[in-house]
Image (tube, rainbow over all chains, first blue to last red; front, side):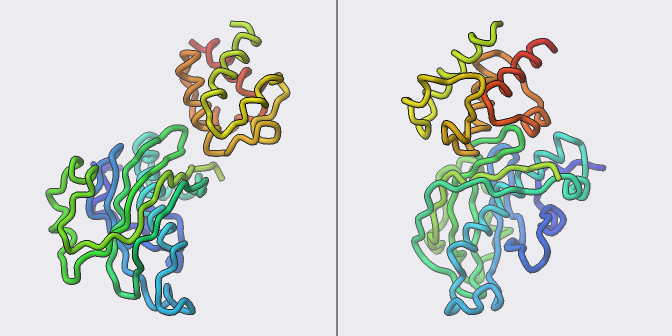
Length: 180
Length: 86
């Protein structure tokens, strides 16, 4: 297998073990292994069904976790084991271990594009912890282009143009890969 | 390295974990269970193992941690086993 430098260009469904109804992640836009990741999702009509048209807070947390701790640890584990994502899916399950604090600052409706920006704060023994934020993306923004030359320093400061809307701040989101 | 010496070092690590009640550390034995007796959150177990690596100058395998039990004697055994590999 050719080992990629990062997750850019990889389809989330290739990385995540989740089935299509449970994947809350559309695309990776920026990824520096050992640093963090930026990935996007847009809630669908099904995601907001029976919840007055609003994407649930708990699903925001799940989307953030899929984009950050699950994706980044899957990547790092594949590199460490020199294995494919498929092999990893067959041998490990991602376990949501815990979250620290979450502050919700806004809400998301069906069709709103949002990004999860995650900073890796701990990774050892297949356990990863991330802090981060969720932002609603300005309508019509080319997200790939916007983050094409983004830097680690910008991520650490959540350096974004004014059109981005802060939706949530998340701390100590922790998950672990456990053997099946 | 004696087992009691390792337990003493582990207690020093546990005193740095803010979620563990320090009063529960006065009577730690090999049979003390991190989860049942000390109410250690599962997230902290990995942090404790990482701190133990530094304190005892060992490097655990990921698989060792997967198989690690929740009692003090389990991590003492692992530290001794890992030191013997060096």
